Length: 202
Ligand SMILES: N[C@@H](CCC(=O)N[C@@H](CS)C(=O)NCC(=O)O)C(=O)O
Image (tube, rainbow, N blue to C red; front, side):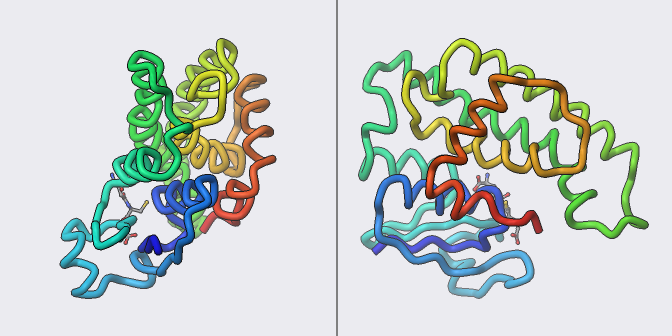
């Protein structure tokens, strides 16, 4: 059975928990990181003091997008294209997500994890602005094709799919982005998305 280590209020853990459901992989998830702290046994597997980490048939792996690619190749190859160019075009959105995460950090931490009196309003406003600008880029892509993975839902929709929920849940101003909104609505029809991603932000 696949084991996923990591608290579910982590964006990077949500990716793997959602993917496991999409791919129909029997799994268990163990809370670790954040308020749960780390054990010496965990740090022996992943010395980065970060989540997620998985164990699958004795194989240990960390780095969430590497995990997504591994699970796809092993369990659900249909979630990625066999065509090298289409696969690469989709793949870039998985790596781009880390730039988006940098842009969103101040708004997320400020509004979700800090008390009102601790918040840096300017940093939150700058972060919200940057999120809207980056989501406009995603909106343009989603005007061209229905999914970030291409004509069908695939692995490349997972990383930004997780962040799209946060973007739509934060109390920030958002530009009108119809293609992004439509994609977000279609993601919400997926059981795994509702169960693992659409949980209260903490
Ligand atoms: N590039 C890494 C980043 C992992 C990461 O930043 N994880 C955060 C949670 S989203 C973390 O471990 N924070 C420390 C903690 O939870 O204690 C990945 O994609 O797996």
